[in-house]
Image 1 (cartoon, rainbow, N blue to C red):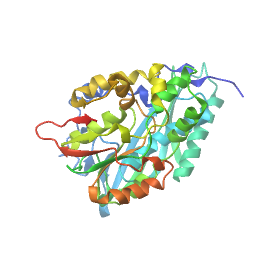
Image 2: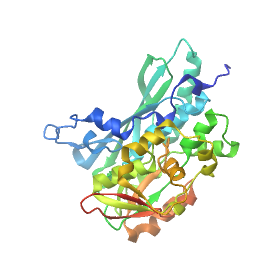
Image 3: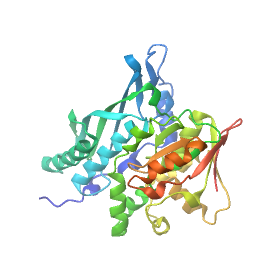
Length: 351
């Protein structure tokens, strides 16, 4: 088997490759869907949500999403697993269940053999098998850097559809996976990652957010999204904006994959981290913290295949905590913040 360092063939990694929220806004300016022409389109690109949602007969919703990126780890099989887990997550984040996937492959055939690409696809098929869906086809191109991902379709009953909108003042916030994948995987590229942290990050990035389909049936969950390339603060900002609420988060309650201060001190953060803060920092108030720069690096850390962010009625908090406690990351069964009235302008307060 050819020995390779897959991450050396790309300039970025994982969800850290994403365009910043600020740049994405400029790209999409003037391109929102005219819903008067597409009356069945419940969620389109105007909503900045996780997947598009099209209403079908019998109160069923068709979900559609796509996600792809450059290698975040060196092992081709693991790269395929991570990319597939990340792409499928958008369906779970809408409360749905995936039904089919198509592969997206860009491959530098002059640098990397087709057999290595086959290993990437094998990793993706392993995750799709766990999600009980086929990779039914796809598309490939000869590209200067390796790229892989999936386009995924899913289904959800209309009553169970979860979006960024719908959160209410008084709701409490939960996050179903610990933070830190961006910091740890960047350290791995530099040869600085601790083995136990690297394995923990890999576990997180290859764990399907399957509980999203079950959480979709809980009416007391008013809004849901997944935390990926924009970091916790960025995806919380999208939720607040869509729901017209403000948020207060308690950093002492946020779960982390490891001692992330070790990685911030080593300046082991993705390039997307600072671009994230530049895009939405104006909406954030940092209060009473000794090292604000370190905190920004953690809360803006691009997550690859991150957890679900939930806005839950306070009365249902214990029910949701019990559901999370039965997952692969039981330490996440704790509220990380709450939502308040936005007034004239939403904001995020970090305590």
